[in-house]
Length: 126
Ligand code: HEC
Image (cartoon, rainbow, N blue to C red; front, side, top):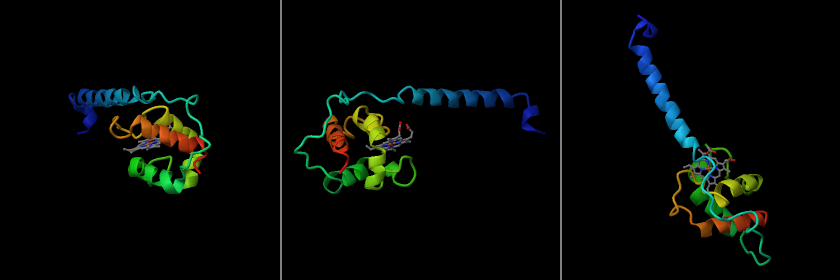
């Protein structure tokens, strides 16, 4: 006997699909990420900036992003050039908004830390 011919099988299946769709929609409502107050107008590369990949970026990205963007999640952020190539997307996701790190709370990455990340990226992630 196939699943389709059982009278109660289909409503149960549709109920489950509806639930999955609802969860998907709920996840999408926060897709843009909460704004941090940092914007392209307020961020710039200070002439005196000393941040480099070696003394800042590598460890910062590994600590905050590496658990997902190491081998599994696009964009991969495991080398300096990968980070540089994704710079504009990182600005949008983790500096201007709190979309990333995914599931973050204010405690995960403070606005000050996001501003530091933005400064380094604005300098070209040297
Ligand atoms: C817990 C896992 C996780 C962590 C930690 C995480 N990400 Fe992500 N990231 C994801 C997932 C999943 C996606 C794809 C889904 C999406 O875009 O919402 C993603 C997508 C992205 C994208 C592409 C989004 C776009 O709209 O272009 C960027 C850029 C990004 N992450 C940057 C970062 C940065 C920078 C960090 C660290 C500050 C970080 N992520 C930390 C899971 C994570």
